[in-house]
Image (cartoon, rainbow, N blue to C red; front, side, top):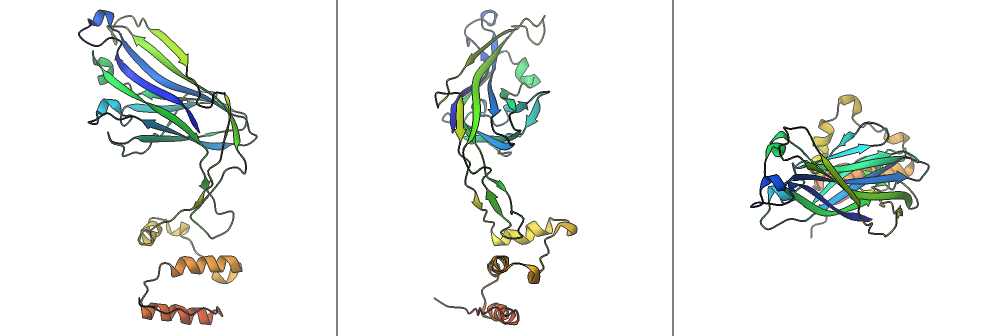
Length: 280
């Protein structure tokens, strides 16, 4: 669901040729208070969709310019803003966090205030866009060996949340980072796209995750030996045997010799399936 717009700023309130003495710098961030009204923990994902200028500008993107924090009832905890390899052409950034039953969190998207940015007398960081909240499907095999690569919905019904987005800004003294630290602050609420604070998020449906067959050996090689999957075919349920066979057969090079070998193996297992190569 769409939540609101957002805008990040680190810039003078009046650009040149206005004199610096009357054009303080403002640092502005996006804050979202979210309450999980349900009786279980959920994993939430926030998507930040940004607008890009033409041509792209490194001061108009979240890539390398922003940090994300979450605070439930203690110190701020950093979150990951993905994709990790974002560039000036990236238009969507995401972060995920868990929120327990009946808990409330403060989620903050803030400018990354590096020493160089704070020392710049005329910074020009300005990023705006809109925010979406999702309830992503999560990995699960439901206690069965197959299918392995699958996501399932976190809930069978929409999940209730309370939302309150706002903008908060701090005006830096003209001589900052020197001087006596005389700061001024502002904050104002943002209108919610739904028009109400109480909202319901529909869970994403999930489904199978398709991995190219050429990637599977590489993924297995990266596993420690103790963690590599071993399946006793004889102990599998009939449904799981079928799923295992489909997984294995899908990785076979379709040559006449290979298919004949598979047919011979299936015959020994009393599985009435024969395979042959059909040329188009």
